[in-house]
Length: 257
Image (cartoon, rainbow, N blue to C red; front, side, top):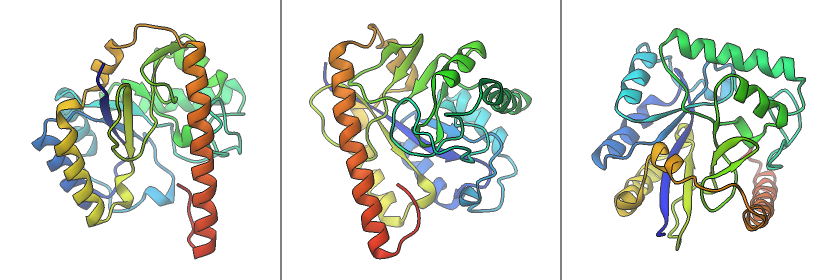
């Protein structure tokens, strides 16, 4: 099978960078791309308070879901409570991993209640910082969410009684096969980033699929080979993050990738 790609945008909330997003949305609509929007239901992270709150945020979100865009439950408040890397072992910060199951349940129930209040249904779970644990998965299953946008396999797989649609890249790259999710954080976009996004979407548009199409490709449970590839990809990603951190400290730049 030729490579297929999904596009995901994290940190979507009422106080996001809507000036930049207007240009992003135009690119997506021009090429009929239906991305995953990872939405923070009750944002309390000051780093995501970029612009004044969009007054029609939830109305806009419902309209996008009606158009076939996928809505991700991106945690609850985007505040990190522990230094646990969770199941995937990528970042040492988490809104969920390491917390008691009842605390995690309370957070996720409150998050879902906000979605229900605004008549938006989450299609997929997207953990802040890629960090969650087995208790998170158990709570999600109990609450009716069985799809996760995460993991580093080559294609969607069933694991731990969930469907995992892997998320492995942060820029488009030509791949020979597999299903690849490219994750963007548009709040930090420069004009150059917009131009690159527009160019990449135009080039890859025929191979970009929706979340539902990716879920329909899930036919197998994760194999030994899947886990072996995932471990190699994780090691490469952790090395990249460490090198990026060293570079930022050297340059005196605050923040994490």
